[in-house]
Structure formats: structure tokens, C-alpha cells
Amino acid sequence: MKALKFILSGGGTGGHIYPAIAIADELKARFPDAEFLFVGAKDKMEMQKVPQAGYKIEGLWIAGLQRKLTLQNMMFPFKLMNSLWKSRKIIRKFQPDVVIGTGGFASGPLLQAANSFNIPTVIQEQNSYPGITNKLLSKKANKICVAYENLERFFPEEKIVFTGNPVRQDLLEINSKRAEAIAYFNLDVAKKTLLVLGGSLGARRVNQLIEKELQSIIAQGIQLIWQCGKLYFEDYKHYSDEGKVQVVAFIDRMDLVYAASDFVISRAGASSVSELCLVGKPTIFIPSPNVAEDHQTKNAKAIVDKNGAILLRESELDEKFESVFTDLISNENLQNQLSENIKKLAKPNATKDIVEEIIKLL
Image (cartoon, rainbow, N blue to C red; front, top):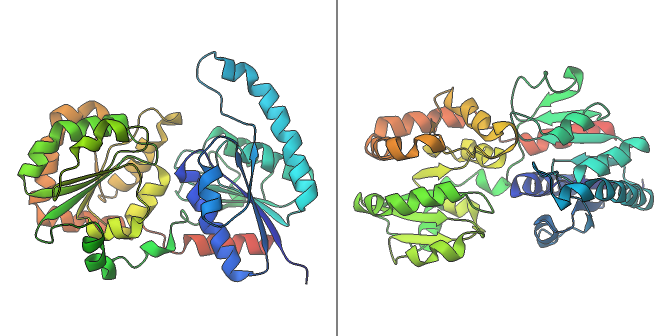
């Protein structure tokens, strides 16, 4: 039997890249001889992250449309034509058996090109509110793997499979790693730990909040691991304080940071939400209001409506944060209740289930 070939495309943010890598890893475990190629956007973070995970990647000259009239937007038709042409070339040369898109700019032209060659395509939609690329691609896709219920209004119902989002497999067993995690981050075992997650690039409003509340958080005997994002690291790194605060741009060992933490403050990107369901820590979501269709608020509400987390909008941080945070850290019943409820929403087999759908298309 000839070796199988898979092309995966997704990028722009960690939320599109890591699911694609998780799917590739699972496919590789099932088909050790298979060949893999990733396709991303030339100047985006996938061009580093994918090779670090051990896969080849090719870049397309593509970017999203800005919301105002810019030179970028005037270049968009040329970039799109160039990306479609290059995608066709990549597919002709590589001849994949299945093409998998996890969202982001590059997956549009690539899956479009795959459709024109009648190659089976699978879309993995992470959000509770799909982006425009996936809505357009869904008409021709063979299968659409989703992480939230009620997406029939956006996608053809007969193609939808409710799988959940792929998450790193090393998060499945974090309880046994607590001691290793405390040592790794050099934490005080007698103190509770707050983890602040702003996404791979960082979240300005979350960083401003933590800066403002830092002293009052420390005064409550809490130590912090504050992931401020690479865009903001230079502005906040001086807050690192031995034994109290660790400011980092990026976290490599997510399994250990979750194992070490007692509470989490996080944006509500789809990957973060799925990971937090799996690790089950009491969480305050602060969704970004600046993303398409306000999908982070919708992601968070899906959890909050089932009493699995707390939602604070950016507009209410100044008046509500202190009382909500103090209530959470002092109320053990609330902590246990949030933990239990968010864990019920986890889909630990998501990656395996998505790969099953891909195998059916072979």
C-alpha cells in the first residue's frame, strides 16, 4: 500500500496552529509511514511553530482583510490570486489523500484548491461562531468537525460532527505533575498560584488590569505566573519579583503551568477554553471584544451558561474585578463547583475522533 499523504493548513494564531499539529501527531501515530505537509501564511507564527514540532511547512503570500481602507486591502486580490495559484501548485506536486483546514488565512486558498481537484477536505472549526473562511469552505467540505453545539445555522447539517477541539495530549494527566510543576516554576508550595493567560501575542486590557491589581493580589498571599504575550513583554517584565510574580512572554510547558496553578484568568480563545475544560481549574474569562463577531464572548458564555466559569467583560473590570476575584479565592465551594462543571464539558478524545472522520474519507 502506498504511503498516505496529508496536507494541513491553519495559522495566524496558536488557536489555529496547535489543533493542526495535534491532528498531525495523531495521524502520524496511526500511520507512521505517512507524509505530512503544512501550509501557512508567510509572515505568521506557524512558520516557526510547525518546524519546531517536526513538520515541513510552505508559506503563502496571504493576509486577512483589514477593517478599514489600507494598502494591505488593496493588495488583497493580488495576494489571493497568488495564493490560489501557489496552492494549486503545492497540491499538484504533493498529491495529498486528504486536506485538513483548521482556520486562519492560508486555509482558504488551500482548501479551495483541493476542492477544485476533488480531493477530500475536512474543516475543523474551533469557535462557537465560525469565521468567514470556514463558512465559505463548508459548502464543498466533506466533513466539518466542530467544538460547539448548534452550528447548523452556519454549516450544512449532514456534514457536521461534534468532536470538540484537539488539545495537547500532555494535558490529560496533569494531577500527577503537581510536584514537578512547583519545582519547575520555583513556586512556594504554601501559597496559591494564579495563572494569567493573554494568548500567544498578549492581551493589552488583561495586562493593564493585572498591573493595576498586582499589589492587592499579592497582599492576599497569592503568587502569579503572568503570561503577558510577546508584544508586551518589554513593558511588563520589570514586575517579575522573586517568589511573588513571574512575568513571561510565552509558556512552553502548558501541562506544568496548569498543574501548578490554582486559579486562572484567561482570554476566551477556542483553544484556551478547550484546554481549561480539560484541566478543570476555577477560571475567570475576560473575552477579547476585538475579534470577529465577538466570538470569544460566545465561547465563554457556552461555559458560563453551564455554571463552569465566571465571565467578566472588559467594560466591567474596573467596578467588578476586585469583588469577583476575592469571592473566588475565598470561597472553596464556588471553586469546587466551577471545577466540577467545567470538567463535564471537556472532550478529551477530540483529536482521536477527528482523525476517525479523516480515516473514513480515505
